[in-house]
Length: 53
Image (cartoon, rainbow, N blue to C red):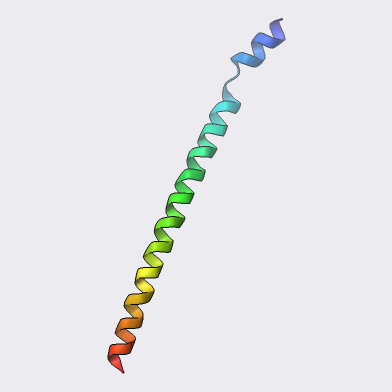
């Protein structure tokens, strides 16, 4: 019974999983933002290049 209580008292694994999930969500948000920004920059550079011709 003591070992079961000890296992349930250990929260380090749960905390590590929570931090991992937070990092994954931040990474997904950053990738989405960079993709959107990259598309806008690409169209801007294309417009500038076409106007310089």
